[in-house]
Length: 385
Image (cartoon, rainbow, N blue to C red; front, side, top):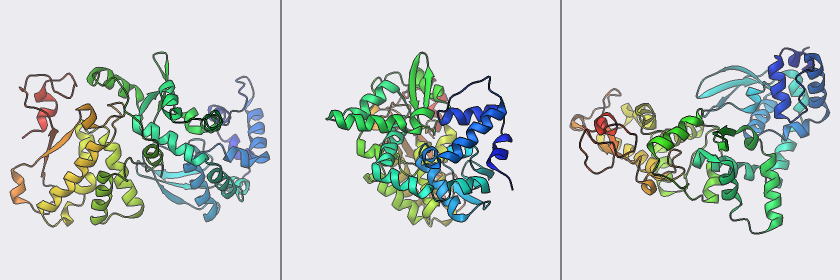
């Protein structure tokens, strides 16, 4: 039977270094691969409770599910845009996957290491508030997308009144994996970046060039931030707001439930961050357009589209430094129904709406009010029929 040593020995030297780095073990680039395998194997065997405690809630829930199914048993999980740490570190075996789901299994040697410990670690983190702090961190990142580390610290600690409270929170934040794996450096400053963002420099450049009038970061509601960090990897923002409740209710009326509902809500939230992009805008409405053949009338279809639009306009945007479209006066979507509306049918290929920004009339050759630097005719004007 394969052992932990054999699993580790099959990894590349670079991958072993990544595991050592993640668990904050001493790094020595001159050490032999055999020595790294030996030390990692000893570390994994000696204190599973400790190294499991260094994983995110999402990772632990994946491991618990796999542990309960048994070793070498494939299990499919939803994927919301970023890979889990247990996948990246290859603690689990990835059988297949795409942008929406991934199938994993637990090698027998790893199963034998963690069996009986995963539930203990989850219970301990639930009891001591670690997961709540993790939700706050991830939710804050999901609200702002990219935020300077110093600004993030100010936001998180702003409402902490006591030194003891600040010390406890500071310790838990420092220990949380997202703080370590989501830090990036750009032009001499350190930023915290949402794991849902694949190119944080693109966000910063678009802010600098296209949305430079947005100078201050939006205000953070701690309660909303905590909720925005729940249910990873299918996070979403503001589901307890009127617009969020309407969105969930509308998707449920279209037949979404369980993981499919969570995935649909997540898709809308994520796509709304880039809704000035044509592909993202198409994805934003996809939970409705993909169900078009089952929607009985144009009036219902239009109502569904408007529900998504209202939600998208109500949530903080990464490009707007965590401000909503209403607050910044930018990136506000509006629906303009074209002439096909009168001939509505349940044809999935029928285009029933055009998208634009809610802006005052401008000449086609004038700069687009979104701040992109492009002429209106080549930017959001192209969506107007």
